[in-house]
Amino acid sequence: MSLMNNLSTSMISSSSSAFLAPTSFNSSRTQNVSVPLQSLRIVKCITTPQEQQTAYKTKVSCNANIAKLQAGYLFPEAARRRAAHLLKYPNAQVISLGIGDTTEPIPDVITSAMAKRSHALSTLEGYSGYGAEQGEKALRVALASTFYGNLGIEEEDIFVSDGAKCDTARLQTRHLFMFALVMSGLGGWVSYKTSFCLSKFCYSVQAYVDSSVIMGQTGHFQKDVERFTNIEYMRCTPENGFFPDLSNVARTDIIFFCSPNNPTGAAATREQLTRLVQFEKDNGSIIVYDSAYACICQMKTHVLSLKFLEQKRLQLKQLPLTSTVLFALALMARLIFSQAGGLACLSPEGLEAMQEVIGFYKENTKIIVETFNSIGFEVYGGQNAPYVWVHFPGRNSWDVFSEILEKTHIVTTPGSGFGPGGEGFIRVSAFGHRENVLEACRRFKQLYN
Image (cartoon, rainbow, N blue to C red; front, side, top):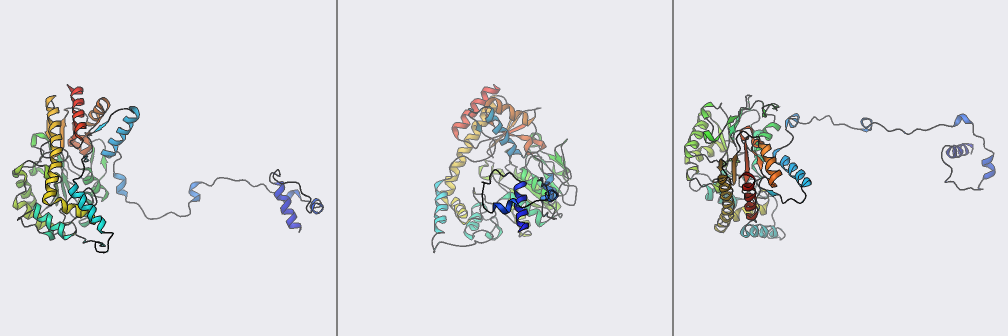
């Protein structure tokens, strides 16, 4: 009992008693209890440092190569600047001709097929679980017959994947530290100096480089020259037709080749393709061909030769895990209803509908090219890809981007974002609603006339 009384008294004496109402309960006994002063204790509350609160830390290290990636990836950085511009000019009518994102609706013949296949999954007869890992057979057969005809490419040579960016990394996983890459993109190629060698144009899709960095194939980024070590950048310029001198290119194992090119819009000629294939054969290399804009190309000489396709097929057969002929849909191609849309694209009605949409973007491109030509700019591309590559000699690409955004409220893409060969250029996308393209061209003329 004395213990309880001591605890009770200690509790009252060490805290505010204002919340305790007067009571007569057991009052006589409580009043007779004496509490020694030396039994009182003062309790202090302190904050435990964060590191002491952590009960568990993993000992699994992160991929150190990720730290090599550069902050300010091209399109997020452009989006950040666009957002800052809107804060400054909240009422501005901003027109985006930057990122190459389509704006016009997908033809009904395609979406209807996707909707029908999607609805079928809700029925007992139409439901299916996992599809074929290489893509549905009907789609692969249609791809082979539509794009390759009698060139010897069969449906078993085609693998429907979820996109080229993912496959870029997968290819390096398959041949880690065993091969070289040649990536043709904007204006130069690159070659690694280690056991893994990479070659690419100085202009290229950033994912090609970043996937190589993450896989540990490069050294660190050198800010003074804006390049990763262990990569040799081979410039492709208007003077050499945006195609490198292959006699100066070190041996490479894998060639990433993009034509028609993003962002320059340049398309390789048959003679250039022939030299590339010979370079490939001489070095025992493999070509990975990025032909995302082939359906826009107007150059008949750009159609790949039989030898080129035969060589490509033989090489890809050696890489069963990565032998991909990619067919791009807006949605993940591995989804069943997406592949149904892909199959509809390859029907006569689908091909005709797609050509109508392509024709719309080609007309946009023509309007943009004519605009910049009329105000005295040197313009490249615009015929074989939906991009216009505009030259601003001696100027910093990001400065031009900022000038156009500030004075016209138009978002473009700085050329240097694609690689060092793009400095002094901007890319203007033809993906846009017609009224926006016309208004943008009016503003371009007003600024630079």
